[in-house]
Length: 375
Image 1 (tube, one colour):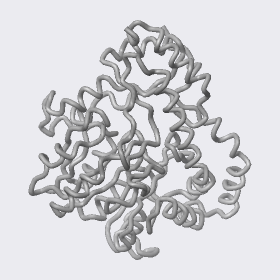
Image 2: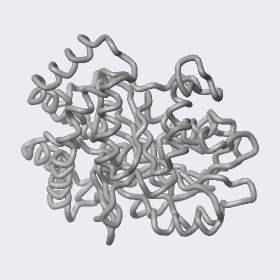
Image 3: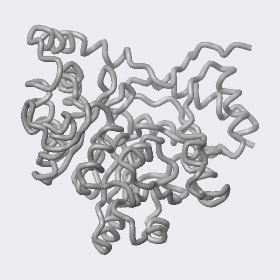
């Protein structure tokens, strides 16, 4: 039977773009009129504004969040023989960036409640070859940065933030993106701050690292035809920078809306068999890129949602260490039990700033009317 069209979409971008259409049209026209489509003034302006927003000294626009992570690792000199620690329940791009520079990803387990990387598992995984720990701010919730910073400083290794799902989140009152040696952001269209295609950025307070990153993204060039090092074709397009420049002033308001919608879900789903996201702890934050619930009989819930025309997401149904791409890394089934359990139980409900209360009530009404959830 074909799947019903979603009456409540998991993500709907028209409602965000339409009110900004005049500003977006003007920004796109400005790029077309300039005919400077790669880097240039639009990118430089967005880099300045995004750095100020993230409360850091430097932002370097790149072509995707994946390239942001890859460029960071390359700029740090990470390569063959090195190990990089990361959580097993992130998007595969986090691991791909490690593989791209020839290093070995070392997967660790996560805290079952927050679903963030577990510092105790990180400590157990550190070895003589460990050079970097990647703290993923998964789903929009901040990772346990204080514990990770203490651990990485103690061992003399780098902490890198994967902030691709956490635009605007704060930890201890400070924006994410300035805690580690560098941070990666993705501006994929569905992110809290989304472009009109693939785009990304690196943030850092290290001026020397920023210079290296600017060269790496542009074929290793310090200036045209002066190639100081091997690099990548990872430049940010001016059209994407122009779009992001229009959207950036709205990001905090959109995050406020996401928190309000999450609170509405929390209230309506209280008392059901679904495990809703625990609130952030002291000093932590959550900007709800995703609103993720859990249930041990997820497949039956998915069928129910499909029958009622409600969109959903699965992030991520196979932990990276169990994928065929990384099957040779020595992690047997059950090696990381919490990440594996979350992969089987997690379910992402519709979440975007313009989501209506009516749609949220419909989603929750369908969920609570089933004996599977409420029983």
